[in-house]
Amino acid sequence: MLNRDINSRFEDWLLSPRETLDFEVKQWLDLTDSEAQGTVAKALIALENHGGGFLLFGYSEDSNKKLVPDCNRPASLESFLTDAINAIVKKRAEPTFSVEVTLQRHPETDLEYPLVRVLGRSKVPVRSDSATAGGSLKQHVYYIRAPGPESRGPLTAAEWDGLLRRAVANQREEIVGLLRSILPSASDFGIASQPSELDRLNEFVAAAVTRWNSLNESLPKEHPAAISLGHYHFAARLIGKPTNSTTQSILQTNSSARRYTGWPAFITLHQDKTRPKLVDGCIETWLADTKYPDVGHADFWRIDSNGNFFLLRGYQEDSLDPNKGLGAAGTLFEATLPIWRLGEFLLRVVEIGSTTFEPDFELAISCEWHGLKDRKLFVHNMRRFLAGTYKSSQNDIQTTGQFPASAIRDLLPDVVKALTHTLYEHFDFFTPPDSMYKEELGEMMKNHY
Image (cartoon, rainbow, N blue to C red; front, side):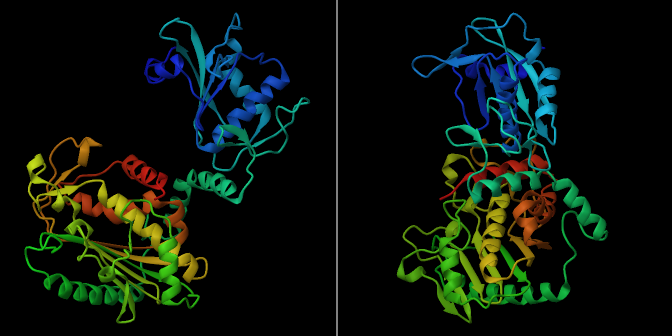
């Protein structure tokens, strides 16, 4: 039962294991004892509710608090194998879930250690279904992994929220299927848009683009923030019942909103020339006149009190140093940036909307990319491998969609895919795998600037 792929990955951990939120270590236990079973069940329930992880058996702390191989090694590892561990889960957890056990061989001693893999795919939070007399497992507790690290029940609203959101995320496919069954004519992952709302959004976009054109054209052609080779813009309109928020309160909400990147959507700077202004009834910012201007940061954005949002930005690719062999300005298109930029834009709009509109609002979305013809896909710093060369034969791409705010919060990879898959297809039919959306947005959402 030696899984060489997993063993290779965890070779360093077997040499020097360290507990983290998704990696727990236990000494050798007598798994015929109910307290030992409770200890294992508690750890596995917490990892399942955490979204998955690993439990390694056979290590204990020495006098220096360092994890070292436990000398009380049992004669047989039968009670640590998959069937035995799953029997503990079935007896002690509700709803039950499955785990997988592999025996990992220590690279120096050649001894095997059981590694339990917890998949974290439960569609509802898991709780303990029985208590042990000694208290190693309490009944009806939704154990989670918490800083320390430790396994315990949720103590704060944020911990409960994280627990519930992970369970809802595991229901993604069912939710998407339900939306498709209700709206059979909808495009993948999107809801058929109401023309009247899109028309209103398009009017807002047209006015914003006209305003930006006049500002951009006022710059000297050699100005580093003058956008000439291409740009993209995202726009959104909230659909629901507004709470009559003032522009001042919208500004305050935007300023305090979470930042997932160092240069987020609707960024504000404190320089006099770039501070937000009220223009044509809209909060407006233009960031061309900064200390270190460039097209990738020359943002123009607008928000009004009717729930309309607009953000325009040049391509960061056009600010790269061509002397580093990456290509001249106007020739490249970074493959992961649309996912990050659109994901952050949508999250920011929903966060502002949550304070300016009553719950259950929806969003009409419009995305446009311009100046794409003959650009080639690449990934900066080779974070991802692109097998082949993908070039755009079309200059301008537009996508639209309408989604409930809850879909942005809980199904963000699917929403971003719905709004960008057409963009990627125009690069010689390039189709990002679903994992690319999930992984890139997962990395983005770990950040908190």
